[in-house]
Image (cartoon, rainbow, N blue to C red):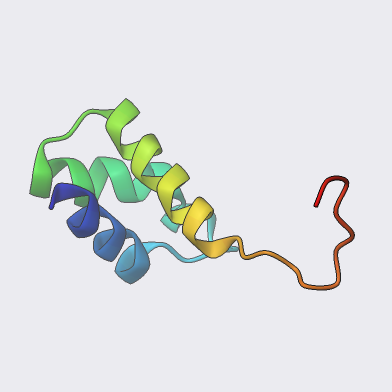
Length: 65
């Protein structure tokens, strides 16, 4: 439940390319006051987001089938 809230807050507030809206800023000013989670938990949630984004490329050759 909290992980989904964190993901949504990051989607709404993080702006790639803007140093004043980096992931650490989002954690300190938006996520931590809203949820109270630790920094380590925040980074774990972001790792989950990255894992969801990665999809398998059908053109990629496989070593083992």
